Length: 512
Image 1: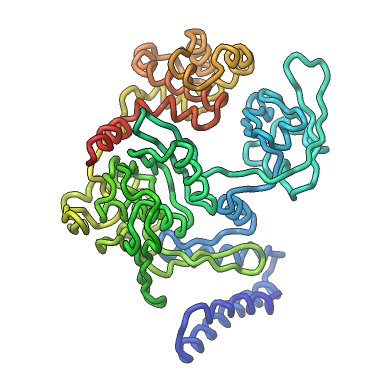
Image 2: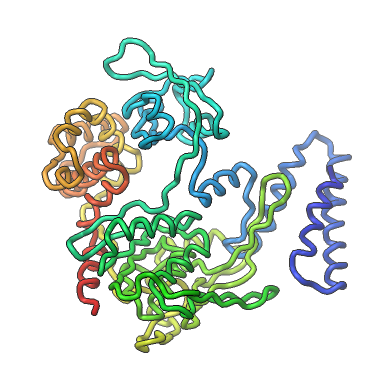
């Protein structure tokens, strides 16, 4: 095995152009590593999992570097690839764990589960020969997903049926959409929510754009979007920019500087655009926001973005695992470095610094730059600082409410009530707009919420409940909408109450 390990390690020697002397030094260092491995494998007093030691060594090397270089195990790589590809092979259900059973929240329209008759609120109690009772949330996909065309058997408990229902389902490709919502806020203002940048993002985006009949004013929501594929971000920025516009450039120690520009005129050169970001928006999201801000093409609204501007090269290690090694830094068209400062080997401090309000400290001493058309001042120093800063809304977020959320009480209460009342609610509210304007969360749901909280050891707090009640009602209503009408239903309920989006509507209406 050590020969295979040496071969894998030596592959890394020629990944970047280096001199013969540097190659020789690298070889000596790798020999040191391999010798250590051989001596442990042959002489160590106890039987040892050498694969785990190797993985631990690789993780240790990555931890000594920047906060975004990383080792990805073979198991994690399968999930990463599915997210980037925009699909996986499975049975096509959304599920949650409720009362120790796998409860079907929704079936994907036209998917394998729906085709054989699986319905929302069904409880899966057996998957093939395994009991599903007591399975954890992260365990279920391992058994429901599989090779396209393979089959899985499930047993289901359904309300109103005395016997178990048995289904044999042939797995098929299931899309992982990167566009969560696309709808018109009013006659002229469109809204598109992008949750990440995968291989299908721009195909989905163009479909959403056409569905909205090419709105003359658009709110592009990149809140919570942690990034993804750089080429999709470049294509999205190009969608709004004329041919030749610089979108992003990269520079690194051992890779040549590269500039990426719009290769053709964008499909939307005249629409008025506002981009909404927050402290979780990162990487590809920052490329889009930074390019549109630097070219004065969009107003940026929200809170300063994460500041992840390091370019990773993903290198397979031969057994399904991979390392992502930082090779360069991103720059916006005006020259700003997107990456916020860090110290090598201090990954924990880097993330804690972000949580404790690093973005809010940028304004005082951040370097200034000028936009490329209007010469407006924009700020560097890490992340994309919005043109219009809107602080997070904390109204109603009492300690009592946050306890209910953290322990899943709000979500579970909605699931329980829908288990009983879904058919009646669906009949009364056939479309999302009617639901949005007329549905009200019943008072008994709030009582059930508090009772469930007590059962979890969360003491009632009348004063904090009264303060949080509008937020709780809104969130419960949004959860119901998500289960009935898909994830877009959730945003249709929540968005009108988000201050950053309220301000975005004002800003897009002002753009000339």
